[in-house]
Length: 546
Image 1: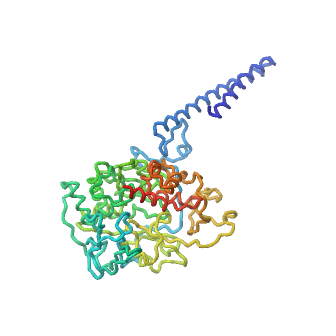
Image 2: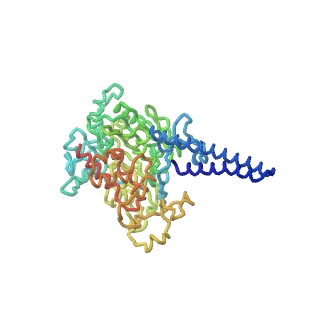
Image 3: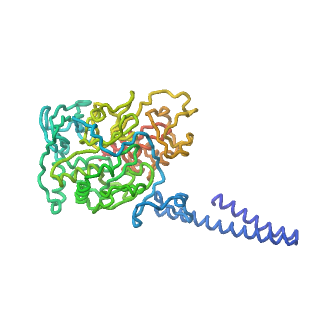
């Protein structure tokens, strides 16, 4: 029996016996009041005991039925969040909001101001085959250095999947085909024309065409490469049919771009992209919306048609599409779903509204080490050094394609990754902090209460890359579970990957995760384990097994 219940019963019996003994000892009028008071206390205790047992039974029943999802309160009593939370959200009352309690918002200095800075310009662009997981290291490149190409013209294709073409984001001259390890193709670089010209796409009747015709059209004209399939985060095969398609309309990663700003002026193309996607799945197209900022969301998202809108409220990683999939329609063995980001949807839409492959991108220039933090209007795969030229302040700076949690370290000669819409700067943390573990004097973003950060929830930090410790024993701490709002045990999964236990990897939820989903776990990890690298190792192992 529950220890607390046993204590309550024993105390109740003691109180029941006490009035009798007292009544025999004295007949004074005061003893009657004491008797009544004790009886009232016993009644209240018994009533409390009944409510306590009923509350626990309710929670147990909810757990056995699988109803105890993140954010749901299966209790007789309201939670503290329900008591203190305001009800002034702009989410329509008819919509359900999934509230995620687990997670952590890393607040950094250097957020992009919401305007386009014309000084951020790039002249060279690249498409990088390594950005596509599972592609042959040496794809078939059909252009040569010196060739002139138009935007949307084919550059290369995977020898294993020759029907899927990868096209140029801009018009211009092919100036380099750079190779990596073992002569793999690392980059196809284009020097852009000052005035862009586009390859005209054949007309397509979206309303009356079959799904097969639409798939072939997207594969031949560059649209298919923008789709990612889960599990594995790969470009789907032509024969794959997703049970649903998911798009997150907000990003909660540190310094992430505001997608409601990004979509301004492109509402029609975004809706057309959704219409295209709805023909590719027998299920639903899901939009993840930010309930925390419901009043400031673009009408392109709130008024989208032909989709299912799912509202989420909570700290990072609430904006991750993987988290939204888990709480909407989880991936089971043998199933797959597709995901796209907002600007990929716009590119698909413009293939049908403009009749051309338009890979324009709004890119956030973020980080405290930049003199100006704003947005750049450019194209997919822009040269990072050209975008930030003259804008870097200080020395010993790390550049990242993406955000600080899941982005890729790059140099000023690198190009933005295919799916990235953010450049981040952060100081290198290659210094030794004496007694840093004993005297933590420098403020930093952390979930630890060693620092009084919880007293100042809105303070923003200028962080660096110092890990404040070396790799340690991989011990169970419960930290991962405290920041990952999924019904998954990530630490057990990581250990299963390290020992290559395929059955446990599958059973522990490997199929639902990609690197960005465990990036916050890596941030809070006391053991300093490279969780994203370990997860990709597991995903690649399962992918090879077929």
